Image (cartoon, rainbow, N blue to C red; front, side, top):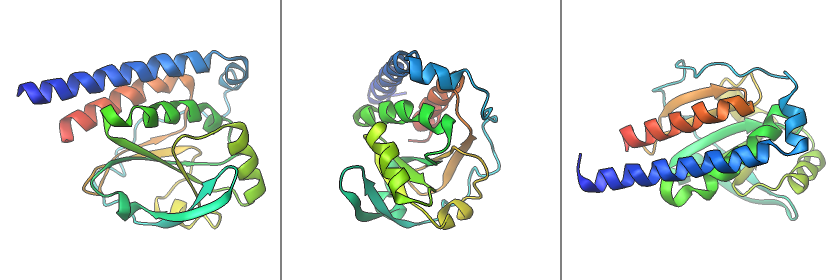
Length: 197
């Protein structure tokens, strides 16, 4: 392993460690603790069924919390970057828990090289906008009201996330989210990005 690779891995470990600190602090707030105490959707183990297949391309409008719909974003425009793709909905309590985690991943983009993209399957724009005003996202939020993209990815659980390789194939799939899954998710991100970069 070269010194350059060692330095890059160390930087990523440091950044991922900071993710855990940031998430833990947020998870202990009263609102998030209340949601964490409810077994609304138990997370499933990391799934291998999607691993290795090409991630379906999509083009969806971006949602700007205070400005409505923004310009469309396509997955193909992000080729060359690691993408953490998350499917969620405003009515999903575990999705609320995942927002601080995704914000932390996005904040560490300079070290991790991961772009977070979250696709909402909400049917009504006003509910989506209200959720984002109450829970600001520092990552790209796209809107899939018809659910076509979610169907292309065979999403059956909210939230469901995918790590997509810079070459466009799916590295892993993860279903559900609780505070307890944050560490395993963080470790999996570090391992895959370090091994496959």
